[in-house]
Amino acid sequence: DAGVTQSPTHLIKTRGQQVTLRCSPKSGHDTVSWYQQALGQGPQFIFQYYEEEERQRGNFPDRFSGHQFPNYSSELNVNALLLGDSALYLCASSFRVGREETQYFGPGTRLLVL
Amino acid sequence: GNSVTQMEGPVTLSEEAFLTINCTYTATGYPSLFWYVQYPGEGLQLLLKATKADDKGSNKGFEATYRKETTSFHLEKGSVQVSDSAVYFCALSGNSGYALNFGKGTSLLVTP
Image 1 (spheres, each protein chain N blue to C red):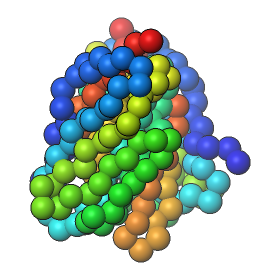
Image 2: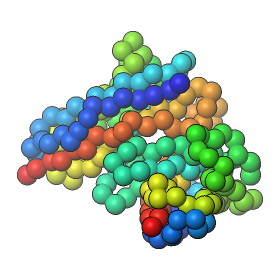
Image 3: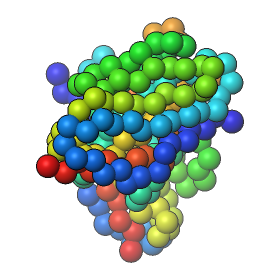
């Protein structure tokens, strides 16, 4: 059973460019969440997608947007890249049963903005 | 809002030593609590979880008990191994939201 997969593994961009990161959830999961992890810090919640809609959003600017497809996979788009966007971007998938939801993480995409 | 506070690292222990990593939280209602582990260059792996007060999560020799009276979820292991060297994150998921709130992480180095 494949876990959460993300692509690409590494990416280098320059300021002002746009980037798209991709995530495929664990089999049986219908929810995808995205997190940004700066070096030496804990992950920060960007947003969560469920039924192809953004269900909850963290404190990130509109430059960060996403999409979920009918097969539950997801994309994270970041426009007008800033140096401060350099981080590890983590995708997590889950399936909620009542109040319980456990998020399982992929290996991440490491983005470097020059 | 919800928040998690972890003891600062790095923590350096000799192999077979006892490990405690402290975690306290602030949240309304009854959050679910998690410990995740991150090995160098990798994503996060779920280590254990607890969803209600007095629950004990356990996995691979690690344990943590959900203490509502002290709003804590301390991670313990009786005898650490070199392979346990990693960064450990405490996290919570609140009643009304779906996001995980993480602590800053505690780096553990176990030496032979």
